[in-house]
Structures are given as structure tokens and as C-alpha cells.
Image 1 (cartoon, rainbow, N blue to C red):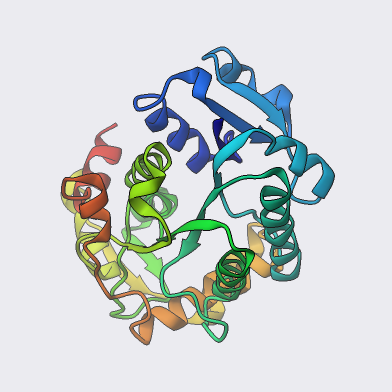
Image 2 (cartoon, rainbow, N blue to C red):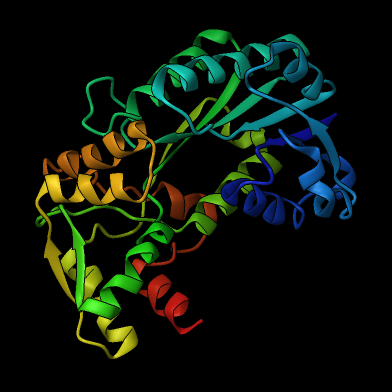
Length: 288
């Protein structure tokens, strides 16, 4: 029986695979990808590449064949589409005889959250629980990696902008979340029916983040608290889909209410070490 990762050519999935290959042999691992032609590098490692698509129940069921434990990495689309896709993936896993499903959720998923994608994750979590499958829910906080997108503008203008006010957010690195997923995949029995809140070890403000960037680069960078409508205008101007603009705008609304300020030590427990701080991540990323 194999262990399978969906979305293994994506940014999170590829990191999970790298970490899992240090814990399981390549012959024990399979991946499911929408475009197998993009997975030649994975196949070259000796990992079985399968064609899977969350929009296709029959294809996904075939992708899950002979799999005991599967990591379902959440898709990227509007809420209605993603809810349907995730339910299809769970149905396919159950139909194929998968025993244990691991799912990448969000911290504190709620149907009424200002971060609109939260509702997707709550629906998927409940659907997995109702399926009768063994499960592990990895409630990931927001990627520290995404903060790098604002760095070029900050270094050019001196302003690191976001409509964040003094909100604190438990940013966490994608790599730490990927390693945690790989640890669970390699030994699922130790994490059966567990729900983990995977946050950074400290909730940070955008003013602190601006300070980290300034310290790392030696350039004068300060936080600029953008009006919400200006932020939305910027997101629309770079061509982001409407559902993503709505979600990102809502993230900051929720963060100002304290939605993403609660620190959990679940990640440190799984990793067996402290998670990487936002300051350390940014310092090393900017040095590179």
C-alpha cells in the first residue's frame, strides 16, 4: 500500500514530497497531479506519478487505488468550486479504499469568518469527519513566504503596506508546514483523528515585519497602514481573481478582530523543534 500526496507539483506539495522522501522510500510514495507532464522531475526520483483531478471522481478514484494514507492539499478556486472539488476528493478516497486522509485546512475554520476561504475548509473538515475515514486535520496558519511579495515595493518606496492596523497574525513558513505534513504522512497511526492548529510561535504585527525587513536590508522601511479600498484596488490592478481579492481583504478584517493571533504549540510538538520565526525566515530569504 502506498502513501499519496495530491497536488505534488505545487509549492506546498513539492516541499511535502521532499520531506517525505527523507522518511519513506520513493517506492512507497505516489503523487497525484493534474498535469503529469509537469512531474518528470518527481518521476525521476522513483516516485510513482498518477493523473488525478478533483473535478473528476472516476479519475481521482483511480489515482487513489492501492493507497492507504493520502494527503489532500486544498485546491485553488472560488468557494463553491472548491467545496465540490474537496468533496469529490474525499468521495474518491473512500471509494478507492484509502484508510486515512490528511487534509490541509486553515486555523480556526468558521462559516462566518471574514476570511471567506475559511468556510471551504470547515465544510471539507466536516465532510471528512462524516465519511468514516480516519483523518488528520492540519489547520495551517498563513504563509510567512507570502510576505516577500511586498518586499520589492517596500525597498523601493520605504513603505511596507497592508490594511492590517495593529493586528497580530501567526505567520508560519511553508517549509515548516510541509515538514509537519510529511511527519504525519510517515506515521499516520500516531496522529489518528487529530486536529492540529499549526501556527508560528509568535503572532506579529506588520509594523514588526517592516522592522525585520529594515534590519535585514539596512534600508529604511516602515509599515504603511493602507485603507481597505486602496488595498482592494491594488489587488484588482494586478489581475487577481475576484474570489481571491475578497478572501485577502477579509483576512485583514478578521485579523483586526484577533482571529489569527492565537498561538498554538502543535507545530513545535510535531516537528520536535521550534518552528522558524518570521524574523529568521525574512532575514535568510532577503540574504539569499
